[in-house]
Every structure is written in C-alpha cells, then in structure tokens.
Image (tube, rainbow, N blue to C red; front, side, top):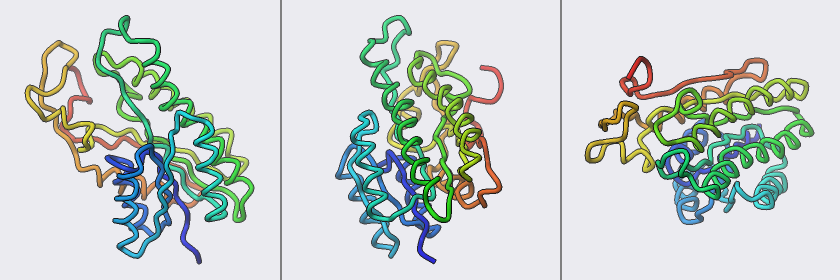
Length: 252
C-alpha cells in the first residue's frame, strides 16, 4: 500500500514543523506549505534524509490563488489527500483593542480564518472525490479558542471562529466520510513563545508579568498523529494539549 498523504500548513517552523516530522515518522508522505521557502526546504531535507517523502510548496494562505495552486500541486503530484493539518496562523502586536489598526485585523482574519476556510474547501473537494473516499482535517485552534490573553482581540476572535469552522466541517462532511477535529495548544516551545520565558515573562490579566511553563512541541506532533491515525468511523472532535502548569486552568 502506498503511503498516505498529509498536508501541513505553516510547516517551516514551530508546531507545523513538529507535526510534519511526526507525520513523516508515522509513515505519511508530507506536503509542507508555508510562506518562507528556506525553512520549508530545511524541514523537507530533514524528513527526506530519513527515507520518508516530503515536498515543500511555497504558499501564502492569506491569498486564495496561492491556496488553489497548493492544492493543485497536491492533486497532480499524489492524486489524493488523506490528512490536512490547518496550522498556519499569525498574531498581532499586543495593543488595546480600540487601537488595533484595521489593516492588522484584516491580515489576521485573512490568515487565521479565511485561509483555513479556503484550505478546508479545497481539501474537501479532493477527499470526497478520491477512492477510497474520505479523509481527515485537523485544525489548530489554540488555547485562545477558549480564553483570551490581554490585548489579543484579533487572534482570539479568529481562534474562536476556528471552533465554529471545525464544528460545521465535522457536521457537513459526514456524508463524504471526512472527519474534522481541532487541537487546542497551550504554550508549545517554539520561536513564537520564546517571549514567555524571557525577562519578566508575558502580561497576565491582573496587569503583572510572569514566566510561563512551556512543553515540547513534539508532543503536539504525537497528538496529531494519534488523531490522524484513527479510522474514519471515529473522530476526536476537540483535544487540548498544554503545558501542565501553565496559567490556564483555574482563576488568575
């Protein structure tokens, strides 16, 4: 049997890189999508050196034409798609809600929500038409899909919207044997969370700053591999993977 095909967006660094490597170790051929070619090529080389197969495709998920080109490449190269990990996302500078520039809001929405929606659309088109039919879409929701950090309105609003996208996709795609689930990640150790362990740490709701615990991003990769490996008759709709002692559960 040929390897199953997985597509990871935002695959050049951080969580995307960790998930792509984990999927490759689990036997998937992996398509790596991201804006910057250099880190994508580095991850592809790391995967290919193990004997697995990785293909890097420069993609900007805030641009519809770029997404269409990505999925056309997946279809022409592999002929099918078994797993989509919708991971690409950006944040915004922590400023008071009323001071957030409109252009910044638009850019975060275009990347975190509209881009994920468009990737989902294109994945469905491939998955429902292929044989064997079906597949799995896994969305990166974030802890912010549950609760905001201070001054994070654009990121938090889009991650709450991702939860709605996950539920609608799960419901609407049952008829095509397509599962959709969401992994909400808290404080994975990536370049984006370095600020949590530097200096005084990051701003808390009470106005103080504190260093926050982080976890190895490889554990997110393990979680996604578990979700992806289930039969299509079973779905993990939501999973939270977090640093055990991070300030999320409880008051504060």
